[in-house]
Amino acid sequence: MKIRTRFAPSPTGRMHIGNLRTALYAYLIAKHEGGDFLLRIEDTDTKRELEGAVDIIYDSLKLANLKHDEGPDIGGPCGPYVQSERVGLGIYMKYAKQLVEENKAYYCFCSDERLDSLKQVINGEEIHMYDKHCLNLSKDEIDKNLASGMPYVIRQNVPTEGTTTFHDEIYGDITVENATLDDMILIKSDGYPTYNFANVIDDHLMGITHVVRGCEYLSSTPKYDLLYKAFGWEIPKYIHCPHITDETHKKLSKRSGHSSYQDLLEQGFLSDCVINFVALLGWTPGEQFDEIFDLDYMIKNFNYKRISKSSAVFDITKLKWMNSEYIKKLDIDTFYNMAEKYIVDALPSIKNSNHIHKIATMVQSRIELFSDINDLVDFFNKVPEYDIDLYNNKKSKCDPVISKQILSDILPILNNIDDSQFNNDELFNLLSTYGKENNIKTNLLMWPIRVALSGKESTPCGATEILEILGKKESINRIEAGVAKLS
Image (cartoon, rainbow, N blue to C red; front, side, top):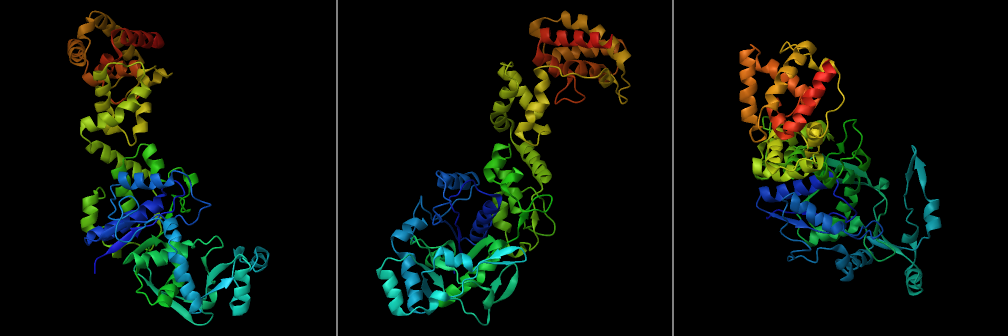
């Protein structure tokens, strides 16, 4: 049997990390076995649909390299792959009426007021349990209501006695009392199917063998099973993934600031890194493994039996570390193309492309996010306010007195260098010669120069590199300001 999985998002906005993980796991399950991965757009909830959201789904899957084999944009043998288009073909109503004829579903004409009266509050939670009132209507009453155009829904007729047991590949066998299950709506008053009904019909008609979704759907699964059994259809394998929480173990939300795939990309995370990180939110490839791996590795090693039942923590610190590892592995040209915009935005006064390229090489191994670049290089714009205590350095045995002497001594050296010779190699040679002649070690020599030029304890590059990028005039102005500050 060929494995067939699907990703069936609703077009309601940006792709949540949980949805991205569902898409990834469904893709990996299929591709690990040489199967098919389908994309289906579930747009039956018209009130929540947002304009442009379908394009976000396409773009997100493309950026994540999760290529579907069938879908709305490329077609396939089981189309259409958009549920609203399937509604127009009468697919869902056909199957709902079949259930009605077999007394496994029924028309419900109850008003909103009556339904509101059935609400219960149990342990502070509002519970909606329908009382099967319309199940007892006679055929004449039903026909009369339909003929008069009375609004209706079609409900599933769930047994009130006994139990329903279903099997999940992660959580095992789960049994529920049928009396706790509501007669869920299959067809809404607008003629559209509910999510719960449509996905069962479509999964069967599209030959889906493995259904991957979040564990929040565990409570609805018994009703899905009852529908499969009502139609006499084979039940797919269920794979429910654990919750994703933030660092405080609260459910990940939009307010967390990093709940969507697009949020993370905009913050400067690399797509390959995000996919790597998301794969590990509930799954591991084995007992011993390197946490940095690519999609090909995932396809080869993915085994859904290794998905955990425990909640997965979205550790932003770990994600940043992983991103820094991905950034370090980029070749310099790729990194430069990605970093150039951030450098130019941070340093609008630097026009020399060679200097911009040098700054890129300086920061590549020092950032976790591209947005970190600004704080690393902002001193090129202006020296921040700093205390003269910054000139103290125990390791090089530097202090403000020594610093003032060094800065005063190198000013004439810098003044005598021709502008065309004001580059890193020439500057390093001249300053090193001064250091040797005065028995000053390199780390002691460069410390006060770097402090005067940057006003920072650490910089992404050495003193002579800063001198070159600032240029002769600005460098001398900053050294003179340093001497004045130490006087």
